[in-house]
Length: 213
Image (cartoon, rainbow, N blue to C red):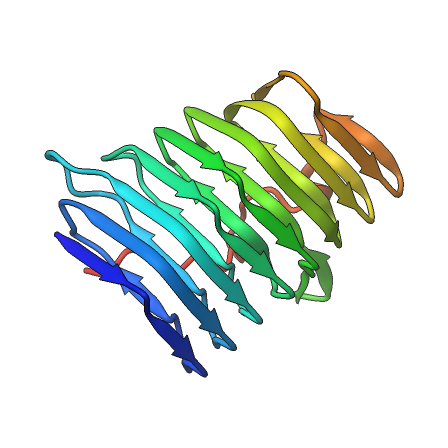
């Protein structure tokens, strides 16, 4: 179990926080700036009581995602966080079971070149997630999609997306429900349903690091 309050991490060569095998995680009121990896990378594989709760984190200038949670052992809450001017995704949830993303703001996410192909650059990326609820959040000025869902289920309420390509991209085997007051604006399409591998769905070049042994 880990609780961190009012922390500042600047100039980390890899991830600012690299966390795994925790029964419970509570991160409150932090600042993360200029990281060589992810701002926060939490592995959610250990079963048992507890939850992962990330609140009021300001993450900027990251190279492999701002807030990244991988695994479905515990419920996840990301609340009141800001992710700005970084690469891959502002918030990335992979294989998460139940999650709430509330009151978050993601701005200025750019993609990366992998094997000569421009990939990623999403405000919120959902990969193989069971039930993600997004409310009162904004995903703005993203290079690819404001929100991208691949093999995931989610519900959006009071959410705004603005991106260069797709406001909202719903890919293979995904179901995303729109609640009240949702707005999507993309340079090519506001809402894109059922895409292809050209949108860089997970592949061997995914920047999500492997789980530690």
